[in-house]
Image 1 (tube, rainbow, N blue to C red):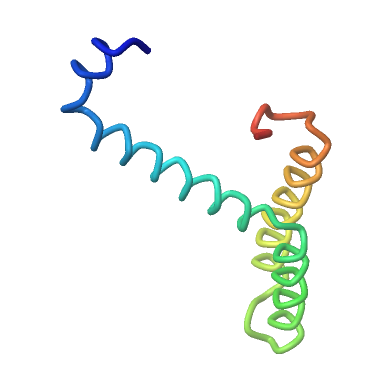
Image 2 (image 1 turned 45 degrees about the horizontal axis):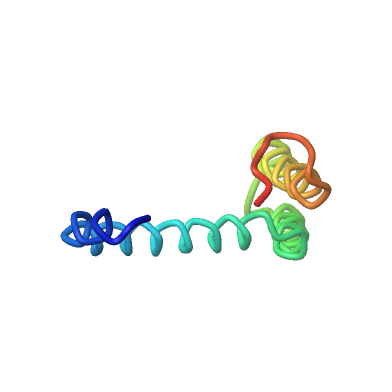
Length: 87
């Protein structure tokens, strides 16, 4: 950008900075959400809840499907294929 453009856009600098910060937070949240180790830990906790009788088979199946979907998305993200969410 040229000097004139920078001067004209100066009043919008806080907005641009805020958008950058929001993007960084979203990126980190997605990284944590799709972290394979975290998903596997959630699967283990889910199985413990089933064995303890806290949830029934139907709820277990539903939640397990959601976690396995996250794990699949994580694998696609790490290989750079799939849903276009690679960084």
